[in-house]
Length: 418
Ligand SMILES: Nc1ncnc2c1ncn2[C@@H]1O[C@H](COP(=O)(O)OP(=O)(O)OP(=O)(O)O)[C@@H](O)[C@H]1O
Ligand SMILES: [Mg+2]
Image (tube, helix red, strand yellow):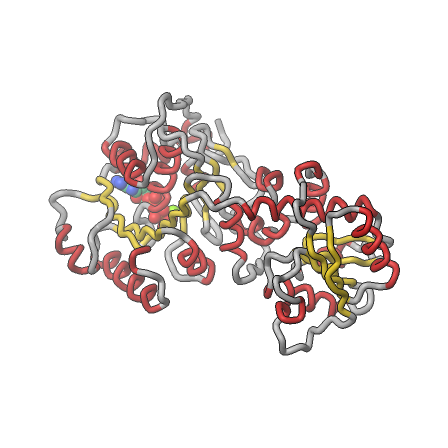
């Protein structure tokens, strides 16, 4: 996403939502005299910020972590002057952002060139303030940080349930999209599906959602600018009531995800949903590992085949070595058949734990749901649907009265051809 358009979106966010019960603490870094004076006047005239300190060096060669020189607790806002030395200012912003991700970093500069603004944003700045810094500009930026702090203080809510295939094609996307639509529709739960595939995710296709603008990793890259209004532009809405944040299409520029950014994004999302289901690509990429550490439960979706079961064992062993608690793993056996070549007890013996859930093998139903782009169109009619309804109850959801139904636009609609 273009940071300028992100800024534009943010510039429209309502300031009234900000009511700081306690002023936001601010640390300045290498600010010129004029800017520091504006800040002091602002702090005196409105009880929104409290100036904590002003550092006269960028401290980029410091062996100390930024959290040490910023002071404890980390300030709410750090304002870095980019005019004295742009390179060092960017390095300072980067180290503040990674050491104290909850601190909002503002760049301040006389230079309004778009590529310089983008560079500053990439180094972790959530705002780019132009000198001479006006009261209005400052007030809007501070209000956005205040709004986000208020949201952070609300307790986490959603269960974050991650789903990963023991290998490709085990049925992760089918289970996630159908379970998600079920939770949203039959159980009236505020539910979000996040497609964590680095590219070519299928969730949007399975849900028949072809019109969306942004993908999950753009959200992650911009998580420090995230608020309720901005989130809306990332969501695709399914007629069941389910929300989706899709995966990239696959032709994106390489991206740089800072460690901790995926978890931080989910902390924000958690506050807005009852359930978040994550469709993960198989494998143990850094993003997947961060997700596994952060989620409440990891569901390894497998089928009753030697290669898949061997991968379940290998994943569970690896994650245990990474000190992820064993209670977090659940094994979901998809395409379950009573008279399978490898029996359930043999599977449980192999994987060293009970099968958490068995989804019946019903190819015709699943393919129909995918082709129609509407997992709730055949509600109540199939074994898979009934089974996933039971799973939703098992996860703690209570059925709601009245389910929303809609006409499916069919297979061609998915390809944007109906
Ligand atoms: N319960 C089921 N019964 C029968 N067929 C199923 C079932 N679940 C999934 N399938 C079929 O398995 C195939 C793969 O499903 P799906 O795309 O959901 O898997 P995936 O794990 O998301 O794959 P990928 O690794 O490509 O993302 C699809 O053709 C689907 O119809
Ligand atoms: Mg898939």
